[in-house]
Image 1 (cartoon, rainbow, N blue to C red):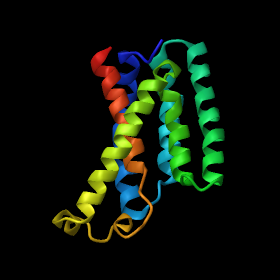
Image 2 (image 1 turned 180 degrees about the vertical axis):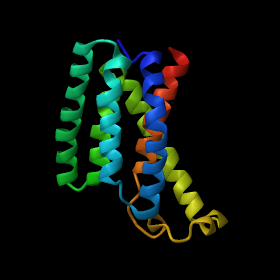
Image 3 (image 1 turned 120 degrees about the vertical axis):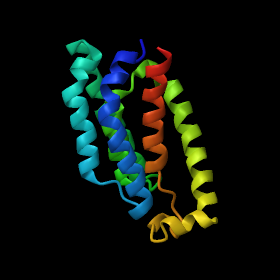
Length: 163
């Protein structure tokens, strides 16, 4: 069974400000602060039991954190993704139901493509003058925090609206 709308409603008030901050900070300095990841994980630790309604399910969702962290470290070691991105994905993983993995990955692919195109278009437009000192404008690497935080938000909003 996928995540329920009730669970999404529990998570969204905590996730929205963290996700916005992560996206903004990753574009600004190309880093996702550990404090944001700790806050995201702490929000699951505090809200998860109430959101999921079952202690057993709450504990099972903790395994998502460890699995994503382990796989993410392998990707980080191979240079595919940054360490902050891995930690953010791991911190967000308990809020995603395993049954929703296919939909979640589709949302991620869409957000990654949309964020990349939007960021690159803004980079070469007058919009760049709004934040001329952002590190992401001149960096060859793309700030995935924008796509990762968008993915988590779209997933939770989608669950809240459709279930």
